[in-house]
Length: 474
Image (tube, rainbow, N blue to C red; front, side):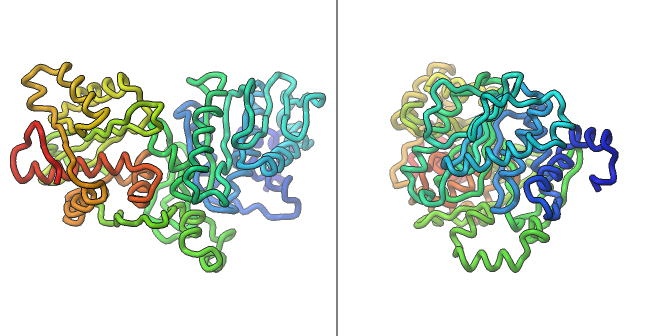
């Protein structure tokens, strides 16, 4: 099809349409191979274009092996953006230097192609600064390749791409995964030239409940695009402005490229756990699985009649502790509760206090549940100071757990099994919560599960009688 276009029309198409550009990149990197353009390529392209136009600045793309995700993002997308803006500087990170060099080689093969130079005449390299890891443009931008845990002191970039940061060999090692994840958030992301406008994009296949996707998904501000090899539920996946692909449960992502026969073979070769993680994007924790997430009801819209709103707060001991604070916003309606929103982040105490107060005010929250221990105890004291004595007496619910986390979640599942607990069908943070539920009690984190079980068990007590200022969880 590209060959049917005149040179000027072809160059315009390559500049203005990323899927067209991607097709040309694929043919350049795989001469003699037919490019099988699929709807999920448009989905990834649209996701990238939304980042580029500033609709969001933190993104995650999860898809199965051989879905072209690295070629699309770490090679083609970087070349496409630099073609439009040669002042951009990308830092592209891989789990090891060998992969970093390979992707850098493929990128340079694209930007040095004659067709690319014809399509983007203002984007020129600076040969004296070009090597196997660094490509610089004549206007000061470029692409710098590196690996996880490398020394990036002194480096800076306008945008960061993190491509498969967790090697499969360490996927089940919580400590090693945690080290990689800390380097990404504490070291790598500090290299953004402008924290407000710079983008950070994670692209990977899931490898474990400890991986970087699990680490970032529950944080505020991260938007995800999850494309398993087989649809796990009915989904409407955006592929362009105002247009979606209706993907039905059980349908294959790209049957021309990953057929059912190939997937069946991979399932046998890899085993259930690895196939579930890498191909279905549903990692399974060894020793986890205590919670059957299929028992939770899912909703697309809240009921029209809301009885009241309440918050469930799991407070961490601050940023230095490495743990998260979680604020969950619940709506109660007709004997059921609906998890409408969640904030999960490393928060210093003043920010946690401000967030709780602001969310409570915005939604007219009737009750605020806080575990009366450690940071939660201090938060309760601060909230008592913020509200009048009458408001504090009515609004603040001090939770004193008397049983282990597993016991509390087990009791919460009684309400779940009864169909009383509803989770969102979609949401930028819901997949992180589902992953944590699936890994419980052996996952790297359980802060979201704690806030959830606290909410459910309190509501069970609420239905049995009027709430008290202090509730003992059983």
